[in-house]
Image 1: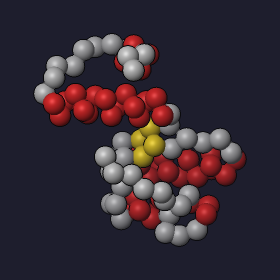
Image 2: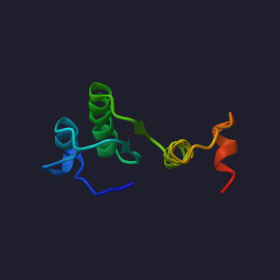
Image 3: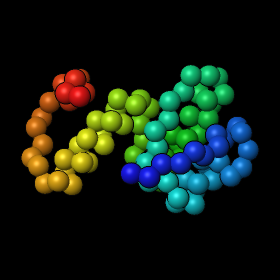
Image 4: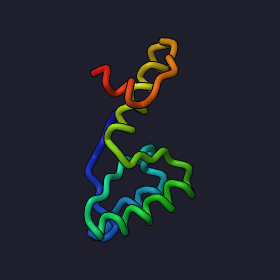
Length: 90
């Protein structure tokens, strides 16, 4: 999976909002810890919902999603487990 750094909405342009609107982004992982990042997060959430883009707010959830995609790609059967069970199998 390819990833790249993108400016926050409050940091200038081109930023994540521009890239979402252009269809350049397939998945978003956004963690918020400051007031400006929380404000940006709200705008990002609105855009990912509008454009139906997968969105994760924690690294753990993103890792679980990546693991499930990897499992599907290899053709292995998925087991039903809690998120905590999957993440403890490192």
